[in-house]
Image (cartoon, rainbow, N blue to C red; front, side, top):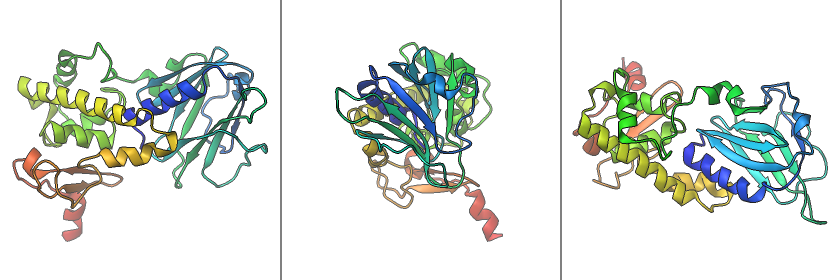
Length: 291
């Protein structure tokens, strides 16, 4: 799933490639991709793209005073093309969900981007709104962890009275905007903290360490992604991860084996030596299989 660093990189890419161009057409190719109907998607046509913003994991293109808000969900992606095909996209069962065509420079080809989604669970969502706050997912977002006004005290206030495990808290978009499964694993590894630790039990030193890990991990990931072509961002993300998705590999810090805890629709990875004092966390799915 694209998370804050990748979405920020896509924002910067579109800022350099789409701003100043006229949005000629926004053409859905999947029935369920568009989540709004008023204003219609056609209202964007003819408007000049004036800004590209990010709200957590949401992209926000402003064109003609309207906002095209995009959430790529788990398996979605944005694919830029310097020259789009002349033929309109054909609705079907393929990965294409939406095509946005932009004006050409001079007599050159018309560029734009496709939104695609792999797999059968079609969750990629597009909204056409007059204000991004009209999108429910944007309206409920917590603070951006890379915002200048997000301080260690801000994080401490968010964790006060929070009874959930810290892994789940970091992934909750209403607590912090933009962190998902992969970067929560990376942050907790840097913070040397168990993903099962209760958030409310974090002392001042724990909170300071977690805050530094959040800022450093996300900032470094954004810097690695900066300037990378949109089509290479997934590869760049994977190459920079130290524990997430690396079950069975040696921890790059201590050399211990990276372990996994599986859930019904996801998994987390951690290093026992770095994060849990050598203790192996219970893998509930495997425990059930062994009964």
